[in-house]
Image (spheres, one colour):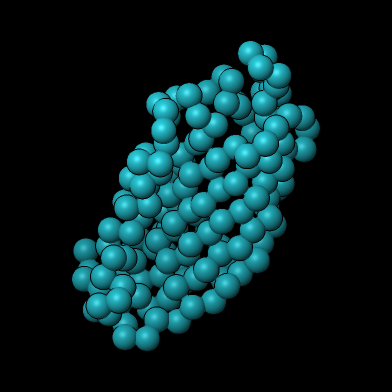
Length: 150
């Protein structure tokens, strides 16, 4: 793994791991009892440099139909951590409540509409990394599961 040359950005090698571990420290009860989801997957954006990106995310339920998500999205090939996106979004369930009344399940199949922003940091290893901010909207037309079912 390439070492970050800028002393202010030396955290970049451990940033995604730190973010993920900090979520575990913030949860006061067992993770299975929370309205909380973790994600790990691939990611793509037309404006991003060529290569593979990994999406490390967490989503928190903040209401019956609302959720808030954060993600760290580093490029892992061809030059690891040379480009990083820090993303947050607010999502709304379109087909029904994510949560039902106490003890009752919410809707199991849903569609989610997200609005958010992403901070792009490019050239992390250089003395003067470039930054840009992007706004986005995203539709997930088919989402399975909810906090009741897991």
